[in-house]
Length: 129
Image 1: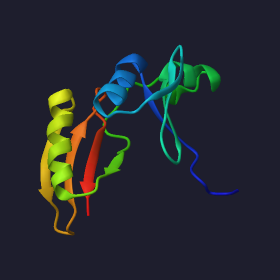
Image 2: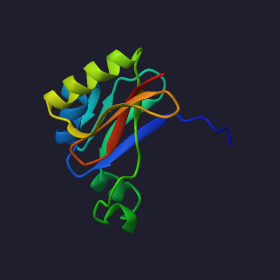
Image 3: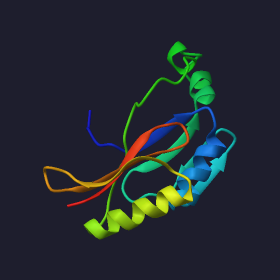
């Protein structure tokens, strides 16, 4: 098996709400969309949002896709050019509707990092070295 990551898919019960967040607040462009699925333009790997019900259906109703959502399952980290960019972007993202988790902080390893959540409560970060 070749170990190359080709797609990151966020599972949700509300594709429209998540798509609106990633498009309007984080600035992704929706490449394609169909009922229960959206693919967003991203450099590198494909980035998509998929309804949990669709994955349940295509995996013959696998029970794990029927379980209620539980806690933080993944984090997306977005690199920025400077510490000042982190401060500014965090303010803009929160002002636009992201849930603030932890404001910009210079971590002990030197990165300036801030955390915010999407509508499903997944916590993501922005950072600069």
